[in-house]
Image 1 (cartoon, rainbow, N blue to C red):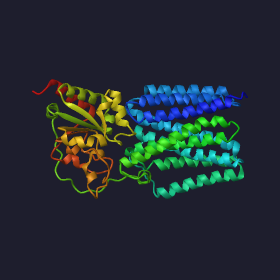
Image 2: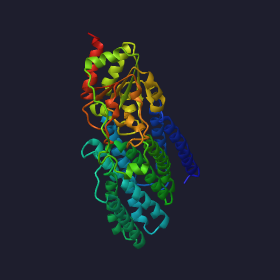
Image 3: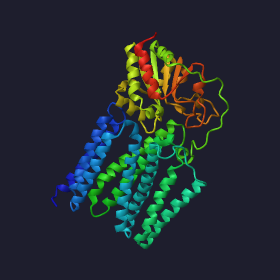
Image 4: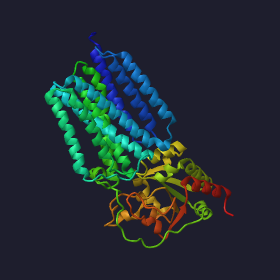
Length: 464
C-alpha cells in the first residue's frame, strides 16, 4: 500500500463531512434547498469514491452492478414521480435505506457472531434497520391509499408489541450466545413484524413525524453498520456510512422533535397514542356553515387589498397547486397582494406545501411560515383556506379542546374567510372546526382543483 493512500482517503472523508453539513444547512430554506441537495450529492459521491479506493476491497463487479441498478432505478423514479406522491417516495426511500442497513447487519452477523464488539454493532444496526423498512412500508401503503389511513389498533397493542420485540431480541441473544445462524431468521422476521405493529396505530395525519423518525432511524442503523465495518478488516470502507448515518440520524431526530412540537404533542403521544382512532367528544358548535357562490367569492377576493392563502392536504389530494398559482397570478393582475401561509404540519411530509407550491412556480418570497404570517391575518381582507382543517381550527386556543395548545394559522382573524372543502367532514382530530361556523367564514364546497379553476375564470372575466 502506498503510504499516502490512507491519509488521502481520510482527507476526502473529512471534506465530505464539511460539504454534507453545508448541504444540510442549505436545505433549511426553500430558496437554497436545491443547492443543498447538490452539495450532499457531491459529498456522497466523493465519499463513495474514497471507499472504492480502500485497499483490500473486492467484488467490484457486484458493487458496480448495485450502483447501476440502484442508481438507475432511483433516477427514474425521481424523474417520473408526481409532486403529490412525494411523501410516498420519501417513505419508500427511507425504507430502502433501512432495508440496506438491515441486510448489511445480517451479513456482518453471519460472519461475526463470535466477535462481541462487531456483532453487537451489527445487531443494533439490524434491529433498527428492520424496524425502519417494515414501518416505512406501512407508511407508504397508508400514504398511497392502499390501506386505511386511520389508525389500526390491535387489542392490547402495547403488550403485544413489547412481547414481539422482546422475543425478537431474545432470539438475537440466543444466536449470539450459541453462535448459531439458525436463530437469526426468527430474529429478523419478528423485528419486521414489530415494525409493522409499531406503525399500524399511527394515522395518516401523523405521517410527517413518522417519516422524520424513520429517516432518523435509517441514519442511525447505517451509522452503526459503518462502525461495525470500521472495526473489521476493511476499516476505512465504513467511514462513508458513519458520516452519512450520523448526519442523517441527527437531522432526522431534530426534525422529528420539531414536527411533534408543531402539533403540541409529545413524540410518545404521536407514536403510542393511536391519535385519531376514535372521534374526539365535543359539544355542538354555535352557528352554522354558510355556503357562498363561486361568483361572490371571486368578487370578494377581486376587490380585496390582500389575500392570504392557507393550503393543506386537500390541495395536494386534488393536485390543485397549479390552479392555485393561476389564481394568485389573476389576483395580482388586479392589484391584489397575495401571500401564502404555510403550517409546518400541513400535508403528509415536512415541507409538503412548500414543495408543491414551488413546483407550481410560486415564488419563494411569497411563502411564509406560521410565525412570520400570523400577525398579518388581522389586516388581510380575505383568508383563503384550501384543504386545511385542524391546522386552522380556533378550538386549539380553548382549554379543554383536544387540540388545545397546538399552534395554528390565525386565519379566523382575517376580515373574511373563504374555505374550499369537499364537504362538511371533520379533521383528523375528529373535532368540528369552529372556523367553519364563524360569522366571517363562508364555505365553497367542491373539489379544490375544480373550485379554484372556477374562481380563476370568474376573476379573469370580472364582475358582471
